[in-house]
Image (tube, rainbow, N blue to C red; front, top):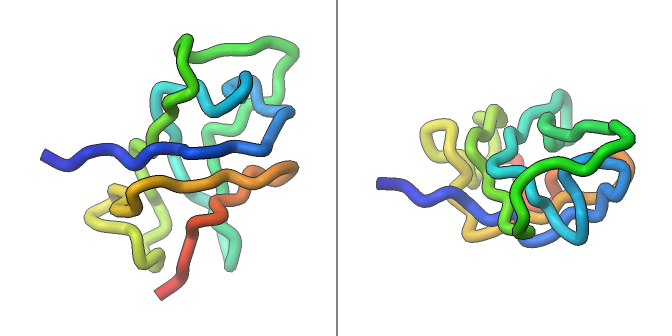
Length: 93
């Protein structure tokens, strides 16, 4: 069974799932063009998610990423950048 990649850091402080780290149970990486992004990003006046900062990558919709293995992220961990919630670990093949 595959393990889900860890979201090791998230600098997107406007996201409701970032409370000192990604605390979404699992995120989806998507986006268009040359930028992969966290499509789980939610900008609300509330904080949500689990009580720990151990978010994982459930699905990767970027088929051209070198880490994508059957729609799962094969990287040990990923980083999410600020403002646009870009997946900084994305590498096009």
